[in-house]
Image 1 (cartoon, rainbow, N blue to C red):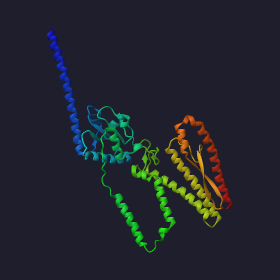
Image 2 (image 1 turned 135 degrees about the vertical axis):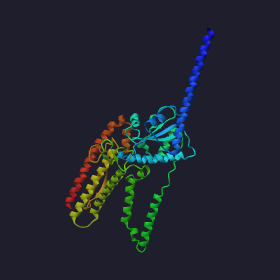
Image 3 (image 1 turned 45 degrees about the vertical axis):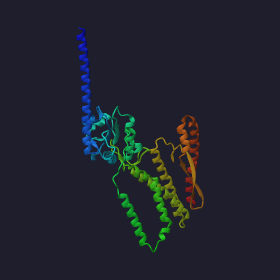
Image 4 (image 1 turned 120 degrees about the vertical axis):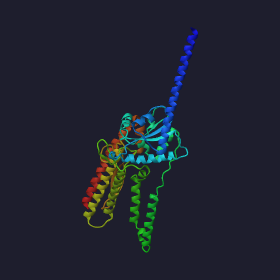
Length: 402
């Protein structure tokens, strides 16, 4: 009887071992089939397009010994997602760089899920925006850091490669296709300048014209202060349409981004402020009718006040919680600009300035500096309101005397 029990126990043990071995073998075969299939797809295209079923089979369902980068996007024309198209171009550059690099292996795959091909994927992941870059590690579930924050770092191929290296320890060197448009534009510009100098070789007095050089300097300043270099580096969209309301947005709602149209708006406002100061200066220096000089002075003062206020409004809309404005309460700090009006009287034009030190102190130590900051704001508000009213009424009264 004891021998029979021993034999039964051995049989059960061998059965369990055989079952476990067969399950392991099936998992290995399943994993091998998945890797082989993904490799075959990857040999044809650098980015593997997935629908809902393929996403669940090759990305979500274990076993998996490879990492997957997934771009959730909406590329169809009816979606009107210009950002998705730009992000797809950068993503394609990165995937091609990995596919044709010497470090290429089956440990990392770049995939894509389009909303019109896998809407159930968006619903299961609770994603209602596009594009979204996610990393699915070889083991475990994705963490919060496995979703790329494109609003903070952008979606350039180099930025995505740096994020992939942080998540997978795989370094990808980005190779961009040659772009000769910049070289051709520069060559055309130098050709035009050279031709102009050749045609005007007997009369080069325009090179000493202060107005020409001043206009050129202002153009460069407007381009730099409005964010043209940021646009060149990050490649933002022209504007954005809200998918739920259909409303078109020209100003980005965050301080971490901007639209191309926003750059033009800021450039126009800066130019309008400069035009206002030019009118004030011309009203003082020009000779002629006093009424014309008076109108020019008031127009210049109005341009400076109105368009500078609009600039502050845009700044307030991007930096949520910024408490200072031109006409409203809580003006922080003021400084006086000497504005010369046509009667040789210096009128202080009071403009608000952001006190960085006080703002940082209030942000870092709100409990310790709340009362002090409140007192500063109350004092500055009263002083700036009085100064601003004095400047406008003085300018208006002076213009009436002219």
